[in-house]
Image (cartoon, rainbow, N blue to C red; front, side, top):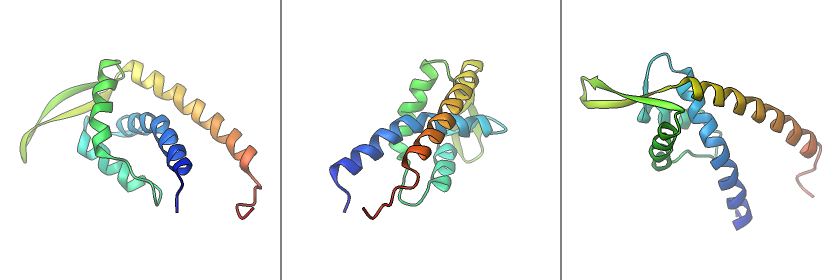
Length: 121
């Protein structure tokens, strides 16, 4: 049974990585991408036991837009009202590249430190 500390670690890690993975999904899209598709792709890629709550996505996208990392446009839809779709700005691409570099360096460091620990101890 997870302890409150387990929940805290997962929450702290997910807050820091959520922005990174959302920007990465937008960067990989060949055309402007709407929030539901971002959430769908993140859910499809999530490791077992981890989820990405859609309720956090839309406030995050609004903040990213106000910070100048993404730009939104309304794209007409044949299935209903126009959809708000997102693309990265030049600043968004620069920030994403820096965060990817930081993530890779941090990941290597953490793996070196925790590697070889017997989880049963």
